[in-house]
Length: 155
Image (cartoon, rainbow, N blue to C red; front, side):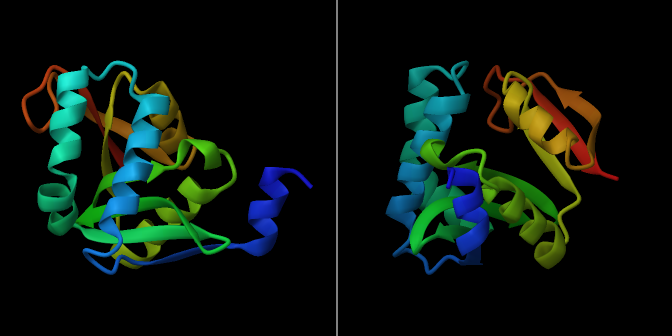
């Protein structure tokens, strides 16, 4: 049995985060995902973002966690119909966790928009394969850092 069939057979559970008890494991998931997909991110920027995850980013969104076999393996954050974050542990990518989190965000939180780092080709492909299309672009991220964002909309 490969990882993909394993994940599908036992199921991925998505639940709201019990703040702040879940925050530390989510930071570890974020770090794992960013290390695997954000090679363009300067170390200083990575450290700055990580240092504010628990105090700034997480409390600002409706946060859900994905569990596989009782273990936290991914999370998403939504604010006003926008998917603000979706990260999957690097060791669990490709088994449906991201899709499950995205589907939950769309169905339960009304997500229709997401911004994606242009340099993160894997994320751009992930969203476009699931019905999102590019509707705009910004030269910098929301904090003014030099990481262009693609603005995507569902439909």
